[in-house]
Amino acid sequence: MLELTGIVKTFFKGTVNEKTALRGVDLRLESGDFTTVIGGNGAGKSTLLNSIAGVFPVDEGKIVINDTDVTKMPEYKRAAFIGRVFQDPMLGTAGNMQIEENLLLALRRGKRMGLKWAFVPKEREFFKERLSLLGLGLEDRLTARMGLLSGGQRQSITLLMATMMRPDLLLLDEHTAALDPKTAANVLTLTEQLVEEHKLTTLMITHNMRDALRYGNRLIMMDNGKIIFDVRDEEKKKLTVKDLLERFEVAGEGGLSDRMMLG
Amino acid sequence: MTDLIIATLGQGLLWSLLAIGVFITFRVLDIADLTVEGSFPLGAAISATLIVEGVDPVVSILAAAIGGMIAGAVTGWIHTKLKIPALLAGILTMIALYSINLRVMGKANVSLLRMDTIYTFFEKLSFMHTWALALVGLLVAVVTCVVLFWFFGTEIGACLRATGVNPQMIRAQGVNTDTMIVLGLLLSNGFVAVSGALIAQGNGFADVGMGVGTIVIGLASVIIGEVLFGTRSFVSNLISVVLGSIVYRIVIAVVLYLGMPPNDLKLFTAVLVAIALSLPTLKAKWQSR
Image 1: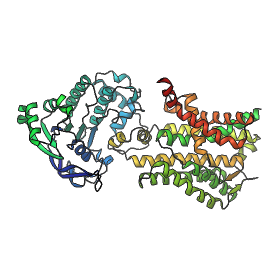
Image 2: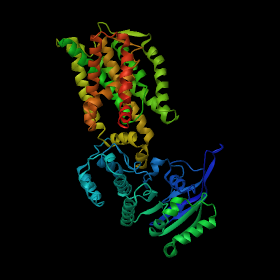
Image 3: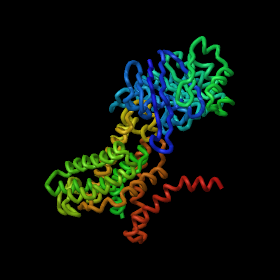
Image 4: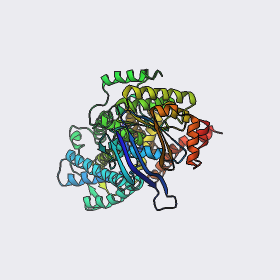
């Protein structure tokens, strides 16, 4: 499904600010894997996700999605394979546009867009049906501007948008970190629901160790630009927060942030 | 007096295409594009030169539109491919266009005295010159609004709008934002050049210096329109811009009537725009006291 081989990424190469964020990452996701990613600040989690999404080119290595080598493909072309939700709820949707307009753009993800009138009545029914899944009453507010909604509402819609055209790969970059605990829990429940419904291959970064254990069938831990721990299925189910903390101590980099400890 | 009102209305409508062009870059794409200072006289130069050469006035306007579109595309290319900031990219094209406009005209000024223009058709129907200007202006403004309403409701149009609001989001939907930025600049400068062509034909001359301050006039129209007539929906926003352009002309006519020296017009407009643009900041400061 997703195959990463020897991914290396260095920012600000040749300057005093040079920082190697990924030092040779190998990762293979099977179809339907729901993988949670944990690691301290600067471990390279977001860089990994952004490398896969094509936000910047990688220095070394190969990225293959569904047998297609996407290593050199620009971000907008990779979007045909990938659904994304960002940490900042404002980033996933266009705030100055209507809910419906955001959704119809998502429905055409990765397709050629032309001079066809974008508003199709049949699609409107579909949008209402999908929105009603959220239970937020948004199905009656199709023409409301996105900017009027709360962070949680926007993040829920971003999730709907990312999964509306079934993506080969769903990338979630701490998508609940900016939400209050209750809303975060709701969005996570919705995430699990959608991933199960569409049998999505998912990579979810989280700072919360309990969430990392609770969700998904696989867990990887990153430290200093490398994957240092990788468990799945039965082995993962047996894992506890204490085990994870011990793993972090073995890593020894002191990369544990307060946010993770308190989460 | 009626004549003065109609003349002001006509000027407002003819200049409204410039305002719409500025609206597309400044509001939709969120870019301050200075290319307009060069593409406005470019449209005038192309149109006037072709008319003198005996080309049909309507055809000359189409040629002006194409010229403006190329100018916009060049700015877009400099910005997206050469990664030069949009503001600077626009300035570069604007400066380059000064020379190009001189080359197009062969001199600094082309007169259209006693030449047939697009307004001649209406004048032959025994409309007065000012009425002809207002009629053509109304026609062009309405057609432009309808076309843009349709365009921004299409798939590509929606992508263009999203590019200005949230480029990261629309890239994640598989849209090449660079293409969208080039397309927006191209469209915008096409309209600006048409505005230049219409103004040149109305005034009876094209001048290499007639682009000075057009960006500020465009901004003034956009902001006046938004403040006075609102931004509820995309259509209402477009119409607001056209009305804003008319109000701007009325304001200019009034201050001139009240005795302000015409040479101070640009100073007046710049101050007007500076105040309007800083209103949100000033308001926030006032409220936080």
